[in-house]
Amino acid sequence: MGQKVHPGGLRVGIIHDWKSNWWTGKKEIADYILEDIRIRDHINGKLAHAGLSDILIRKDKQRITVDIYTARPGIVIGKSGVEVDALRKELHSITGKSVHININEIKRPELDAQLVAQSIAEQLQNRVSFRRAMKRSLASAMRSGAQGIKIQCGGRLGGGEMSRSERYTEGRVPLHTIRADIDYGFAEAKTTYGRIGVKVWVNKGEIMPEGYEGSLGRERISEADGSRRRRGSNTEGLGASRESGRGRGQDREGLGLVQKRRRPGGRGRGAQGRGPARDRTQAPETQAPPADQSVETPPVERAPETPETTSEAAPQSPPETTGSDA
Image (tube, rainbow, N blue to C red):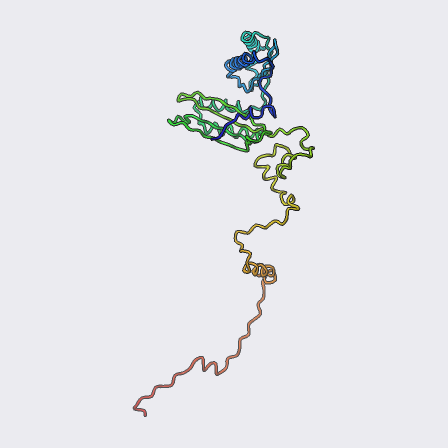
């Protein structure tokens, strides 16, 4: 069976950072973790309609800083900051510490996996066809510049009695490539016939270490990947494979002879195939003239007819004799 690992947790410490940053002794670790859970649950419950994507927490001894990433900052802030002040007071009553809240806007929500999953779940709750919702999100993400996207829905899809899961993929989503920036999101649609889970993976490109192109001691990569990275990460995918295949003949210098492909109607390499090949090289000398040029053919002289040939050609039979004439 396949072991499913969270793409974010697999890349923590390599290309992704922790979502909670604090340090404490062993006796206070459980209290700090429980405090994080209460903060996240309260914010998600109050601002569920605001398009929340991520919540980052940084803690000191007497201060908590909360960074909220949302697609609708106006709803979170409220009129003249009323909603933010109310949220700050509520978090202060939960934690007993001074709370500072930063609100960050997400410019392109089509590339955020959590927001894509939430939008699909909302459409499923509004009785939209799951295939239409998945394909629409797939197209909008690729149009916005994603390298690849994968969407999976599981549950009683379409109200069927037996649950199943369906998946749609476009582009490339390399889950085992650690340098690939894979964003993962999950949401649940609460329908009248049960819950439907929605999972979304979005590939935002590759995050390379600093000075990677100038380093010399690294392992050699393939020519296609090297040319693609030199051009930039925006050309990956189907277009990159086409671009990299155009100049592939020049990259094969020093690799030996390249065998030519056979034509669909060609012959083998035996003696029968080599003979007509020579004839084809001499074919232009005996080619037929084009249709617009008239060629005069010399008249053919006929041989004169001789009496012998005429007599042989038409022999006459002698008259039959009867007994009375004799």
